[in-house]
Image 1: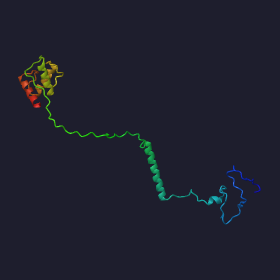
Image 2: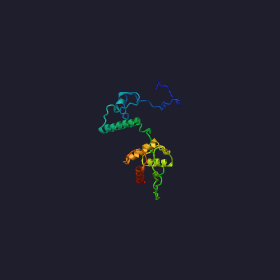
Image 3: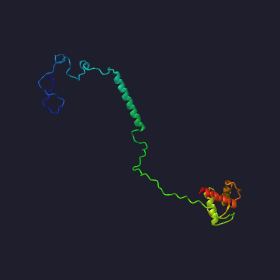
Image 4: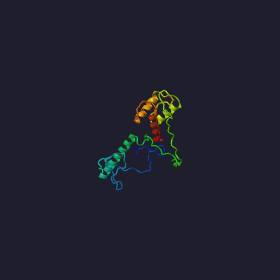
Length: 194
């Protein structure tokens, strides 16, 4: 202790050891309790480093290697899924089911009335005629699938084309005139559709 400075009770010296009056054994001396272990673990002597097992040369068992491989594969899979956006919730939302289900509808038992079909005109007509009878003819032709355009009461080119189409479909001479034979075929066709 001759070269050592006395520390005393200095409270600011956190790393200092209190002087309890004992002396350190010399590095050459060995005791039975020491068993050759060096008291100074920071000295880095060979005796202190050789007492610890070396970790660098340690081998993994087959189970440990397999477990490490599985853990690595799982980590890579999770990273891949995170990069793909699986965990971000950025996908399109699924359609939500309706909050309430509409009540079932019961079939109504009201009698259905047939929709009124256009009636054939009462008399024969020719191109150039005008009025309510021509409008009746135009409605009848439209209900049979031969529209003449706007229902205007004018027996013009559009009505002639529609009447010719009806006459051709009925096997009549397609002249565009509503004569007795065409009127009878028109009445018969309107009766079948009703």
